[in-house]
Structure formats: structure tokens, C-alpha cells
Amino acid sequence: MYKVVSRKEAEIMLSALWKIKESVVTFAPPEDYLMDAMHIALSERIPIYDALYLAQAKEFGKLLTSDKKQLTVARKIGIRTEYME
Image (cartoon, rainbow, N blue to C red; front, side, top):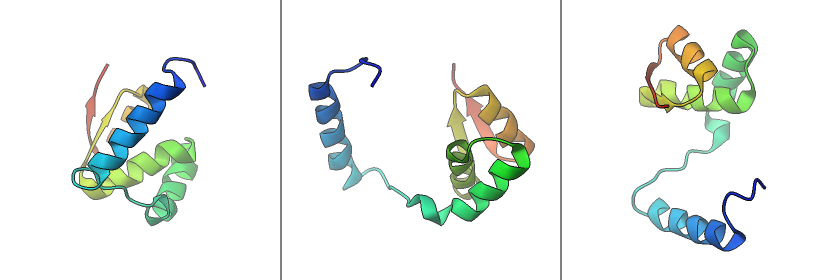
């Protein structure tokens, strides 16, 4: 969409992602976090997609983000957070 990577590069990255999914990465269905995320989004006035990250971080205990607004909200609701510039 932003023409940062070519279509071929995107296909290679997606293929690699699916390979590590089998043994390294766990994908959690968004609906597992939707109720908590909706509460966070509405109470903190942030987009639901940001709130989904926060809801999942609450369960797993920590968030790594480069989004300053997300960082502020995460800390406000008690999520251990690391900021990455």
C-alpha cells in the first residue's frame, strides 16, 4: 500500500511468518480479547485496533510499543510497557 516493500517481498515475509507460526509465534484470535478491548477503547477513547493490543498485553503481562498514545493508555491502565523509538 505504501510501496515500502514490493509484492514479492511481502509474499516472502508472509511465507516466513507462516513458517514461524508453526513453532515460534502464537496467533490469538482477536475475538478472545474483543470485550476487554471494547471497554478500553470506549473508556480511553482510542481505536479498537489499539485497544486489542492493550487487552492482549494485559493477559500476557507486557507491551512493547512505539506509539506514544498507546504507551500512555497502557501505563494508565496498569500494563507494564516498554517504549521503542
